[in-house]
Image 1 (cartoon, one colour):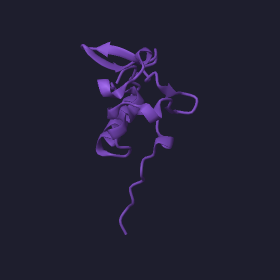
Image 2: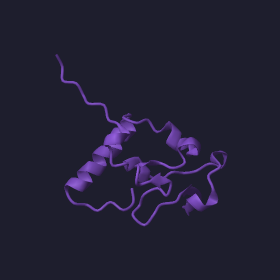
Image 3: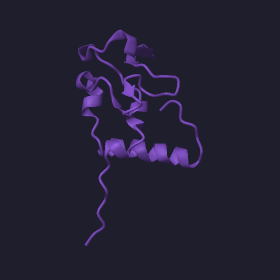
Length: 102
């Protein structure tokens, strides 16, 4: 029998994806107070600690889940990019690198 790789799940995550830059397209219809601008592009704003402003930190879930941006909708939990982002984040934490913006 081979070793089974544990499936990653959002409930066992530090919500690393909620620290990524999320570019918003007009079709997303995100309220303006949740937006910021970076390099001339509309992006989801972040709080002072680098978290997406739509993150409900008490429940560690998206407060606008039903109307979240398209890029968030296609982000595959436990997919290759998710695993890569988590791995890099874990490595930075392990060596004590403060991660304010990802």
